[in-house]
Image 1: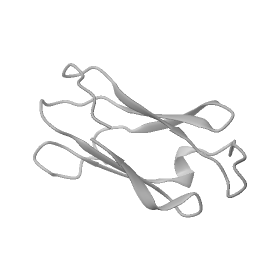
Image 2 (image 1 turned 135 degrees about the horizontal axis):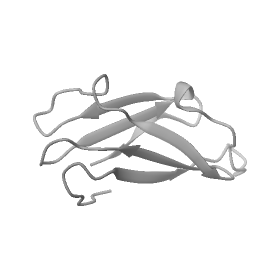
Image 3 (image 1 turned 45 degrees about the horizontal axis):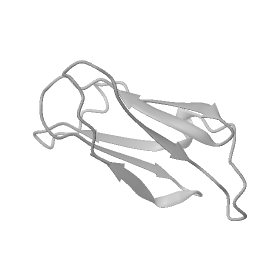
Image 4 (image 1 turned 45 degrees about the vertical axis):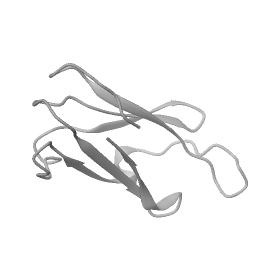
Length: 90
């Protein structure tokens, strides 16, 4: 996914997470995911820029962060059971 946002404005993406039977997965928290955020210089910045994951509704989650510089950011999110290879958005 590619989205344009203003510098300092929140960037976000939504994830719909289902189990192997197609049922929505509820109740996941940020602690359930491995998150990697890379700035336009390809430097990993997750320690200094907060990435939040919150459940919006039955298995629908929102990932959000506020970029602090102009350019192409990369966000990688892993979950061991539901997407072990990861999901990526830029």
